[in-house]
Length: 229
Image 1 (cartoon, helix red, strand yellow):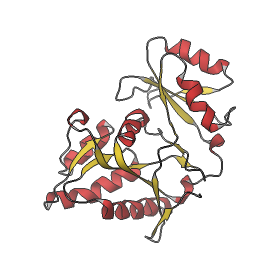
Image 2: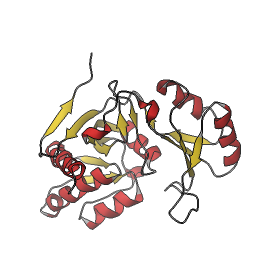
Image 3: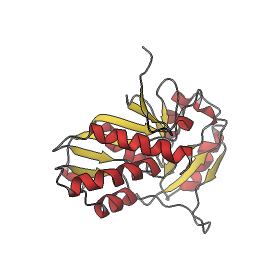
């Protein structure tokens, strides 16, 4: 394993200490959450009574393979704990997510959760989010019009594509484009600015979600980040 893989494993192991019997658990998406799900699976197969809701088809599929009971979000009103990852987080605890294409559903789970635990490795900590690509989910209908409006605001972007070069389709059956850094506006202004464009579903910018952030390290340790007062 690389140092980054070892750090992800350490964060995933730490997250298990937050899981309590009879919780409704939100499952984010991405490689670190995949590691967490694989560690949680044996506990559930041994009888740990929890229920989960998943932010993506891939996370749901993996959880079910691991023996975790996954329910539709429509059957759940409040989530006790959502465990997720992040693409980048700054010193103000502003977060960019969506490299895996599930940020819209991840936002819904985070908003519905009593606690939101983000698992990261040290490479995800940045001073300035303006150099991190920002994913934007867009309705297919009129997507070129929304993209032109985004460009008119000073942004450069690329359409997210599959390996075969067809357009990436989210689990919500929408398109994704990625805003290219450097970003032309302050990060806290970009989310409302982009979302004001008809056809835009959401951006990968997470503001005012108040996460607890656990940083895993290659030596197996984990540190909790605290936001400065």
